[in-house]
Length: 590
View 1: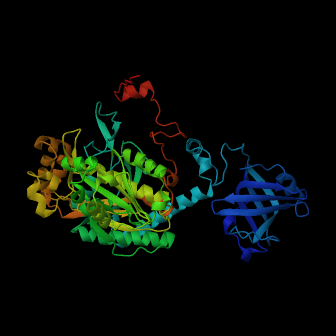
View 2 (view 1 turned 120 degrees about the horizontal axis):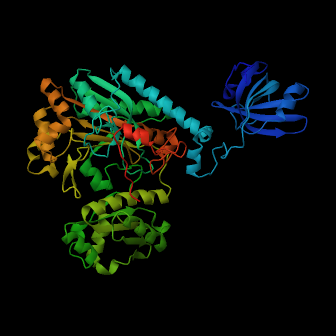
View 3 (view 1 turned 60 degrees about the horizontal axis):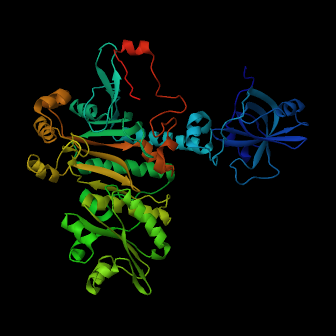
């Protein structure tokens, strides 16, 4: 249908200063109320909602046409702006309304399978199947607008700081960088495959070799890994790299970037410089390398105090090289019944813990099923270590260190969640530094890179690469906000000799290293500047800015947890002819 009218304003922009103006709006019918001689229509577009009044005395033709309007019809309305007789303080446009003189129905709509309103509790799968309708909701449009605004701030800030935006290839070489690659077959090179990039890591390092000095890119990355609430098979990074820098240089400029984002998007002040703590300190105090520091409940190691006690669960853990640690849920002991504590025990078991011991301090003294295993001095020492007072609840896990730290790290967050202590309007950011360079992969029976194989070791630890790789620290840093890693990076290896040592420590032969990464090692021969960088997860950052709990809420067309798209039904079976052209035969086991 030909549009006879021309839009003059967005629906949500009209205010009292527009009274007496003649305007034309276009959008969707949110709601229609027929009061007999008057018809009220809420017209919605991206900017908001405007009340339209159809009055026979103003235009009988428009009134008659309005009688046939249904939900989500697309319409154009021309009329004059008036002050509303009954002001609606809950709407930004609530002081004014438009009396329609002309109505044009641009498109009719069937009854939508989901409601176009924020409090619709339809299943996520149905929301994703009809995502184009789901995205009409004001909350979803607001999320995408915040994403747009954040990307704009990033581009402007980094451009002003001397960074150049450079695009890197999407079809590249499969390399073992950590996660599983998405592979793309090459028709013109039968039997060979491209990989979709897990990150632009190698190319941004090559850009530093190229003399670009400062590079950035807001870029799609792809990882074929198991998904959860804050992961997607395709995700977006704010990717940065800088030449002639050390750790503090990268930290300084990027915390200013985050400060600017939070100020301009939310008007929230992030105090600089941010707190820094080493990986070792983060694990000892919080049981996590991405600690949420909005609340306390820090871990306390009481292994030395209980190694000679009569409680075999504790002593066995210590004798086997593990530890006994706990948290004090300070002042909230009366909030947890025995049933609640049993529920917390079930929770820590999902992280490998075999159980959860506890001590509650009441006005009548200590209550605990394990109290009988401790003498008076041992109990007093334990309470002192936790600064135990009346009203406290102390929770313990005893096991190998990895299990103790992981289970207590998650437990402190779960307890805070159940107590309602996770304030989404409060933002606590910090840097975690000096990560281990390696971690041991028990399945592969070898050391693997904690971040990636191009991370530079702390200079003092380089001699340990061949003898005690588990002790080598990385010149790496993560920015953590409210328990989420929002960005991570490192100073890179810029020497081909050191890079080859790194590959050797990771179990690569010289031949394998050159086969996989020869183009990078070769580039390092021709004068490589010291360089480092960082990548922020844009999706996760937007999730925090919008106070959502799932990154699918801030991505226009996300995948489900099994990496499928209910909207398009991707992935799908390819035609046999297409597979033949790609020299591919599929074998699917039932």
